Amino acid sequence: MGKMGRSLALMGLLLFGLLAASCGKPAAEQPKDTAYEVVDIRGDTVRFLIKPKRVLTFTTGADEVVLGLVKPERMIAVNQDFMDPARSNVAALARQVPNTIERNPAVERVAALQPDLVIVQDWISMDKVQALRDLGIPVVVSRTPRSIEEVRATIRLIAASLGEIERGEKLVNRMDEELTAIQQRIARVPAEKKGKTVALVSIMPGYGGAGCVFDEIIRAAGGENAKALAGNRQGQAMTKEQFVACNPDYIFLPSYHDPRTKEEIYGAEYMSDPSLSGMKAVRENHLRYPWARYIYNISQNVVFGIQEAARVLYGEEFNQPPDRHLTVAE
Image 1 (cartoon, helix red, strand yellow):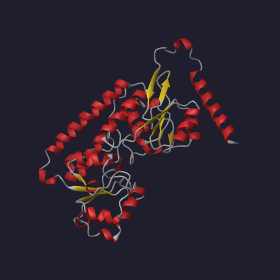
Image 2: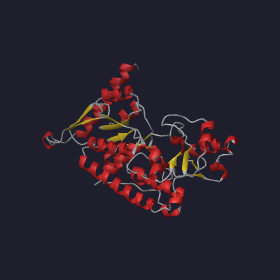
Image 3: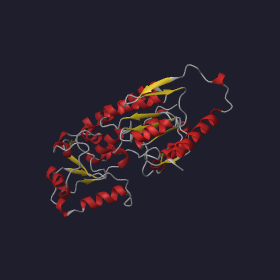
Image 4: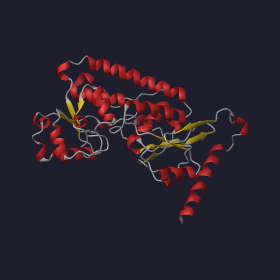
């Protein structure tokens, strides 16, 4: 089947699903004052006649935001990694969503699920975004947060897309309240324990420098980001020589505490390099393994990433369960 044929088939599938979803509901029952518009980060206006009820996103971070704003029944699919409680803080909610998808799924897979809202982040190909929109699927492009302030903006955009602006403000407020509470606890940590330099060893080689959420997590926890101090920025991979030169007090290796995961394998292979043996963190046995789901978090649950960093740096007084999730869903 040619490209035109596939497009027509997908369009037919989507239209059939939308018609089936509305079957049996008289037009008089459809509220006339519920239509709204959202302008996404690319400046595109996305229009909705009613609040979406078959939502999916392309990333785990956006999934967490959606699940912090609405009940699982308003999602048609969730990231497949969220089903495993060893890798997810929202597994109990994710299991209430009827379908799972991989990160950045194919257009055909998305169309088959007949969503009435797709949320993607700004690294997704605009060709894919346009292909979905050509099928009549509302697509909102959100930012990949690089700071806690951008997390707030992303929550507000996703809330507006869901038709839940007030809930968006409530969730931002909840996040800020939790952030204040954690920072008050960190303020009581003795000064001599703070200010330690931390370097991230990540399966994402360009992550962990200045201008990313991890940088803010470490500083909010009372530490200093060694990569940022060395001039490394988000998106720049650090060579082994540069890593040795930054010589941090602590090295963070995000982990799901399962040696079979790609994160564990990458970290073990990276640290097996003999050239790293003279680093201060290696000599002083300051290799630390924060839980990856929290330390990589870029949703409202980033506040638990700060607490996770504090736990690793300061001890068990900052312990927390692995299923913490901020929500205002009603």
